[in-house]
Image (cartoon, rainbow, N blue to C red; front, side, top):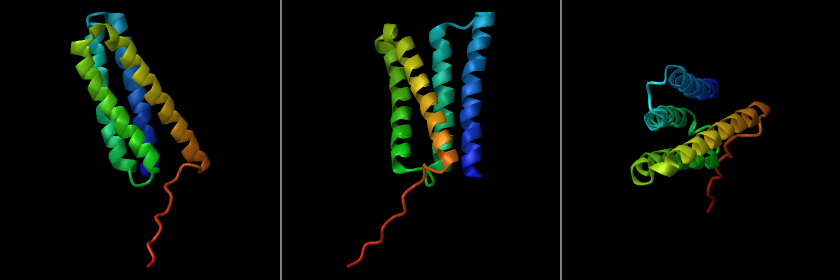
Amino acid sequence: MKERLNTSLQSISLFGVVGLTAWSVFYGNLPTKELLTYLIIFVLLVEVFSLILISKIYPESHTSFKIGMMAALLVLLGIKRVMPDFFTPLTVTAFVINFFYNFYTNQKRRTGRFKRKPKKKIKF
């Protein structure tokens, strides 16, 4: 159940990014850097909720990657002020990596190859 909810959250995240971007393009009243800031915050919130749901189900490598992605999104907010010329391409790259990884893990989960390894009990 939690895995299906996670997949739904990732799909909502993708549709939210595409929808807000399309709305900004057609109406044109939102600057690109402000749009990307809103998208970073939105994706960051979705990733936090997703990680809370599935951190005990998915492998540790997935949890590590997601925490790294959340840290990268937070760093991008700092890059916006320090190096504004790099903000847009780095943000788009981070979104692409995140969405490709989400769909990769969902596909692996469906085939049953993406599970947490059972913990070994220590024997003395």
